[in-house]
Image (cartoon, rainbow, N blue to C red; front, side, top):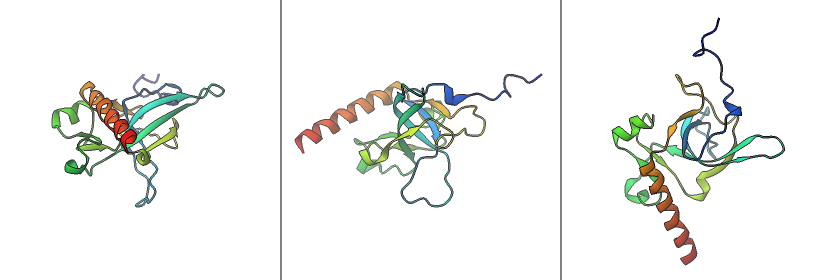
Length: 147
């Protein structure tokens, strides 16, 4: 008999949620070699009415923080307690510029499981950062109108 811990999970059939932090093969324009799973943030989820397939609007997570330039433009997580709570192995900046946000199908081509995880979902963005995201996006919207 196979225990529940070893049973494979059909994670593709489980709907991800906005603000899930996931392991993703984020498509890069200039890959530096083999694709690797990196933390990404799901901003929204859509379901194809005909196929039932899920599509995720995601942004990449990067170790390059650029705090002085990006503090009020991106979500930057660097407090060790927050990193631990959200399962992030290093200080991470989720880039919110339009050219960093992509729509990806929720499948094994673009999402995978980190060692020790049974689904691509690593954790969930803490409420503090969700409020920060809403504030940043509101500032960006005002800047677009004025620019």
